[in-house]
Length: 483
Image (cartoon, rainbow, N blue to C red; front, side, top):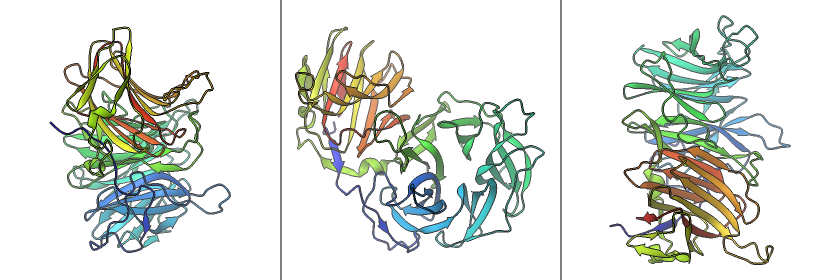
């Protein structure tokens, strides 16, 4: 049995280094680690991931901050382990989201320029040359308005390059929901033939940031419509069917795209910045933890944290006490090896509290539910002073609620007399024949909760920089094991 751990980062989370040396130089020393990358200037937007020669590259849209007079920039970072990021010179400006592909030693970036598809080339991923003669406008036979976010791949079945583009199919003016994934094909990346839509579901205004790729015997289409969504097909031309889980990472994992490193497909997305728990976006974004995107045996889409992220946490924050750091504050709890368990009445609850965990940590446990029971994690609990005539260490904070009976997981701010709505919530099918594995990454104001290495719940927790961690069992026995 493993020793119980709540573990913390051993490296600084707030630093990256700027280095103009090409990322392919294998003699580079590792820069300081950053679990969630955020640029020192500008606002981070849509990521464009690309893997090459042992290096994970992420280009991203760098938007100007209010009052800054400049165009949008394609900025560039790279890493060998998805944890230590090196900043490179900006690639180019004046373009929006796109994709990168390599052909015969030349890297091709396809971008969005004023509603058309643009093109730039590079020999080293650092120095780029725009190709001004290449601007691909919509084909009015099938499309209207403009298009954007081109994703270029090699289709081995058709032995040609495919470009999937977020566009609007030509309509009769009566239906505004004409968002589609447009399709163009090429044999050389320079001359393209535009065809009818790859998929035109007629239910959205735009299907943004398409990401098209084969996976096993399936074809996968990721796209953003209010959140990242997935469609699957047996043939790259469809039909594109909705899987059992359409959005494994739910809300707040925005405009995510993937890169393949030869063994696994890595998903890179971003989360909006919030300065309160009211749900308003204040601008400026942060890259989320890199995930591995995969299909379960029944072809259900799933994501899980990359092992590099778990390995980044090494220090035992409990000082060797393990599960003993949790002290009962309501009802009786039992320490069971690497875990704790409580057996409240079927209409009652039990709480155990760790008063002084670190501000940032990785926490893992396996939850064993009894019929009709629920479990809650109270994060960064703090006292509100004497505002209510008394004080507790859980007056304010955040709650991660797991309710197997309703098939629901939610993140909500916790206030003694002011119960606000959820920051985020998602449907989840809890297994009845095995425990639920919960992994939580708490870093600054970002919380990422992974369930069974299948789905994740993401949210900002800006209002308490630190505080207690409590476990709550409700409406029957619950055990938190293998902490």
